[in-house]
Length: 359
Ligand SMILES: Cc1ncc(C[n+]2csc(CCOP(=O)(O)OP(=O)(O)O)c2C)c(N)n1
Image 1 (cartoon, rainbow, N blue to C red):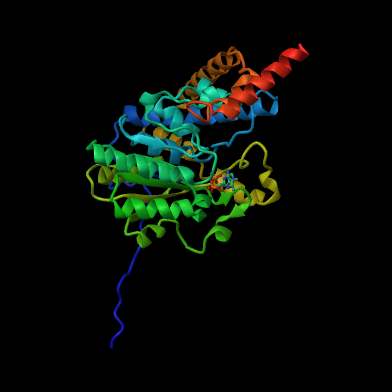
Image 2: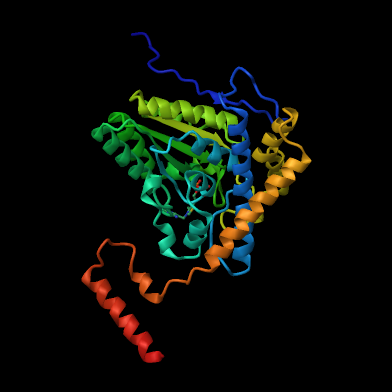
């Protein structure tokens, strides 16, 4: 009997904007100059907010949080492709995407200060809260997509996760169910090459994350995650495939986390300055700025104005956040159950009575 080849595969990598800021016109997505400027302003705002949050954390004015620096192109480019009626299911590093969806910086600060009221996102944003457990939320995304399909709503669900999350069983379950039930979901993996200190090569033996899609009968594609135009292009196409019931997609955005995993980490212990320097040279914001400058849409004064505007917005948000009275100890028991079970009610009463006795 002859040996027949049953499956062969290839995975595309999409790049539109090169590190010098030059675009491939044939692949350039349909964005008008105003939209491109908004993308840039938003990426700058994300970075300035991230930097300010880091300083607040170091000053003891904010809790532990996961920085986004280096991943603004992936996050903002993908979120930009969403329609307001689509759903976003984030992990824990998606500040740029959350801001784009309309979540206030004040609320984001509240969340990372440990105030659970900050985790209750406005319902109309169709954006799920931050998911700290790695990978569990991918299943929620599939569930929402299935519900949308049943309800006959022509919308898509986009879920973000890291390459580390692909080692969780939840990833496999979510991918399988999404394909078998053909639900309108887009899996967006930000492959920033480290899951805390575990590098990509110790996470998986697959040369790409994107190829994992093939095993589930799903479309998979890799994109330069520091190229906001390419990210927008592939995400927009994937969301359209989802909304029209064609098929789910796994997108791998190849990027890099240029700072620590979280404010509790020290990445110098597991990677070299050379490696970080190489990726700093591929910065998504600088790359877009180069493009805008060659187009004549940005000059140094314009750049400084955008920075100053971002800093002003961040300063106002920080002031508003610090003016919110912190939550009382009774809050510790809330926010997990819609209605607190009797044992939590009892524990809450015991704590409050004890604190009252101390006063
Ligand atoms: C189920 C679970 N296991 C372990 C952790 C601890 N943890 C937090 S982030 C992280 C690494 C996640 O890596 P990746 O999915 O690549 O996302 P990244 O942090 O790079 O954005 C781990 C192991 C967790 N939060 N949840």
